[in-house]
Image (cartoon, rainbow over all chains, first blue to last red; front, side, top):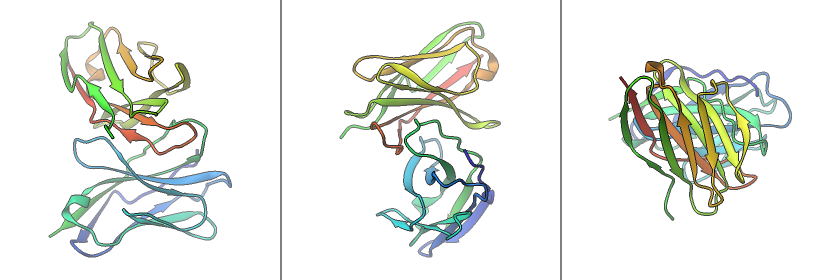
Length: 111
Length: 112
């Protein structure tokens, strides 16, 4: 699975959009980008995933660059409950659930 | 729909003992994965079971083992506990062919 690079921490004002970047310059053609988050002392929570098209669901939007070497997770209106560690994971889909979570980005939403 | 449940939630064991943790996946989910989370190493994959067979395995010693039953419930066992095994052990389940994993609350194991 390709490696990912994320900033260790970010702050975001409550109500504003939180844009979390992820670099995956060695991604290969059949690897998907997954995002999970982990709120303190809880199990990780699936957010969204995509291959090359931008994706949106009720939680977030995923923007993948045309060359697929980086992506951005967007939380459109951050709330205090979005304070968590966000993990960007790149892997081939449907090959089992062996996920490597890395160190993630610690997002703090500030009131 | 009930989420992933793990028992017990907290456990204290002594070095050298063994421990068994249990995970009940979401109904209809046949894949169960186990992860270990420590402050130093972060979230690390232990193994995955699908249809009672181990499908993937992480880089952990043989003291860590698991199994899955016909109802998809899974157990993991750690023998000869070491202080470094103190961690949050997380279980996740997913449907066949889908990589969206749903995690349980974890079992906090403390080895003294």
